[in-house]
Length: 156
Ligand SMILES: CC(C)(COP(=O)(O)OP(=O)(O)OC[C@H]1O[C@@H](n2cnc3c(N)ncnc32)[C@H](O)[C@@H]1OP(=O)(O)O)[C@@H](O)C(=O)NCCC(=O)NCCS
Image (cartoon, rainbow, N blue to C red; front, side):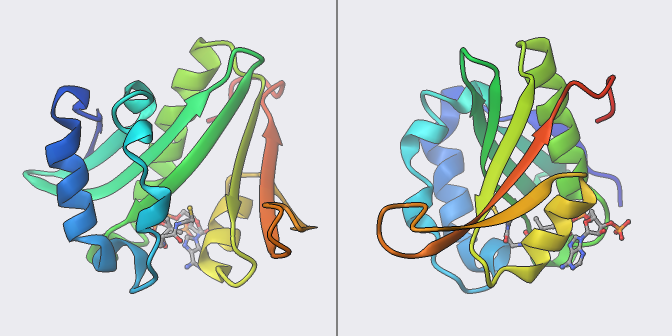
């Protein structure tokens, strides 16, 4: 079943964000990450967000932003459970990376929690380094920071 990577419909951000939140369990395996889905990522930064569509069904999504000093940051990437393992998250990242490069990004970052083995394996498969950082968020917890430089001629 092919999926299309399309720009997030920023003009309908609240409706589509509502759809993502209603299907939260299917995207996040029962973990509650709704607090990370601030409207800002879809209204103000929605020009960087992407959807993977299987017809009318949202099979995956990504949100992030690119800073003026060349950092491409992905806040969230998720693939709906039945669509996992088909390259959807990789395609979402590849499109974000291409868009970020066009905007002058020279490096990429994302984060996850140390227990999220699937996320760590996925981001490593994209060629990112994974470093555990203590007290990353100032709350005493440990976060895994993924990083990759984009000075390596054009790979997705
Ligand atoms: C992590 C996640 C986004 C991967 O999505 P996906 O569409 O299934 O990933 P892809 O099919 O594009 O995988 C690309 C590569 O990543 C690796 N990978 C992906 N998921 C993996 C897993 N659970 N375990 C090990 N490796 C994995 C594989 O190397 C894979 O390549 P291959 O299929 O050729 O072997 C998905 O499991 C998910 O949505 N998880 C819940 C949300 C989440 O934790 N998001 C990340 C934190 S922001």
